[in-house]
Structures are given as C-alpha cells and as structure tokens.
Image 1 (cartoon, rainbow, N blue to C red):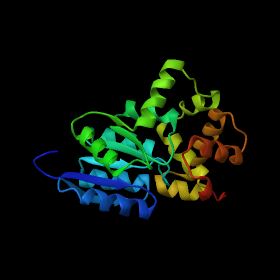
Image 2: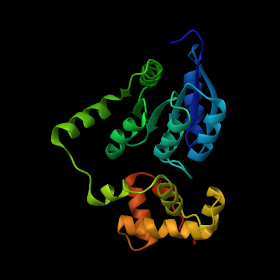
Image 3: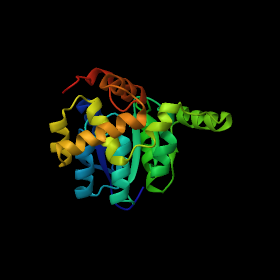
Length: 226
C-alpha cells in the first residue's frame, strides 16, 4: 500500500474482536497494529498520542460512542483515516459519519479481504462501503427516506450533550459523569435537563430506550444508575 507499514489502531469494547482483527491485520506485511482501546474516550486519547494512519472503530462503545469519537479524532487529526466496523448497519449514521470524514463503513460479518480493501481505499483517500451498506445508501437516496421526528431532534444535541446522553443511557451517575468530563455536577444536571427537553422525553427509562434504538448503547449493557 505504501513504502512503509500502514499503522493501524483498533477501537472496540470486545477483546476478542480486537484480538481477531489484530491477528488478521498483522498477517499482512504492509500493516502494523500499533494500539488498541476498549472505549471511545480511551481511543481519542491514544490516537492523539500514537497518530496512526488508520483507525478501525466500532460504534457502540462505552463512555463515548464511535460517532462522537470519530468527530473528535477528525478534529484533532484530520489526516487520520477512520473505518467503522459495526455489528449493525445503522442507516441513520452512515451519511453523518461520511460527512465527518470517515473513510469506510463495514459490517462485522465482512470478510478479511473486505477489511483489507477498506484499509487500502482509506490510505488512498477513498471511501469504502461494504456491498450491503452501499445498496442501502443508494436505496435511501432514491426513496428520500426520512428519519423519525425524535431522531431529527437528536441531531440538535450539542457534542457535549451527546456525550452526557450516552453516559446517562449507560446508567452512570451524575457524579461519575462530572468526574469523567471534569465539570461540576450542576453542569451535568443542566445538560441532562436540556437533553430531556430537546428530545421531548420525560424520564430516564425513555432516554435509555431511545439510546438503544439509535444503536449508541448495547441492550445487554444497561444498568440504570442514580
């Protein structure tokens, strides 16, 4: 692909996925895995330090999902290529991710060959979508498919509100969120109130259900906190 190994960073909250990807990629002489992260916030910090050529990232990760992590990484390191590797084809996110500068979107049932092709395309500055995703993008364009009204409201949340939204949905307490974001508990409460108002939801249960429907958090990871 280049005259030196392409440096790859892996971000996924499942250890077995990271290990499998690392084994697959390191079998290629022109690829080198230089780091891993188990959540989006850790990914942003490590990528900023390691400066990989390509980041392969899941969407549904703790603390900071792949979409917001992509947004932050591209802001800090615009030349870093990001490929989304997700369990689901979240149609509503594909256009947003591409607009943020993502270089690809693949499903986790993709073949090793597809992943290699996606990395090659990313290094060249192209965008790679798995065949299933490509068909959906075309279908959505042809039918001018619209998102639901509440999903439209989610787009109005600020970047910080989206971070707080995810951590609330993960069941983290106000104190936990304030510690993670280095802000006061009252600031977190203000964000929460604004989120509830903007999304037109009345309680945390509805917020969690909405986050699951968006694919931002995994259904099995829910444990409502205080």
